Length: 171
Image 1 (spheres, rainbow, N blue to C red):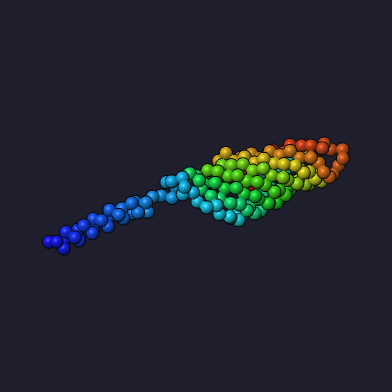
Image 2 (spheres, rainbow, N blue to C red):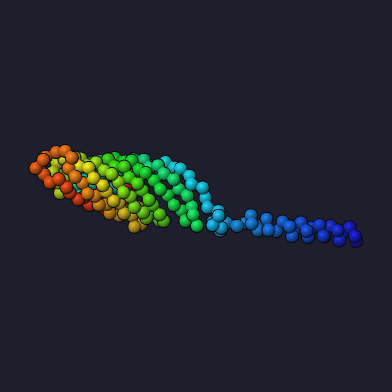
């Protein structure tokens, strides 16, 4: 009888002392503010399709380099993308900062060089422009892109500045 009481006491003490550790082991990763994930680097393809001025229709292909992490149960990512975008009447080469959030929403700011050919919308052919683009993605990487460009080469009689506008998916 003495032996069974002692065994029961040891068992109860073991359960009592190990319960907090067992309960803590079952907590989720995002349950405590101190359990944020460590930032991790990634390289991803950068792709997109756009329709608008001056290129009419274009496809972007490039590479994105960035970091992603989690804080307070939310995913975050910051990226830099380098891509080329040949189109029917113009082509672009861009270096962009990309900030994306939940469900494909986000924005991008890009430094861009643009060259026109054939019959572009709103500007003359065989012109080279440099400028900046802003891409907005309200949801699922779909949204408008607006850019402001200054002529750096081509016909000196054409206007110096123009604004581009298109809609697209991706970069």
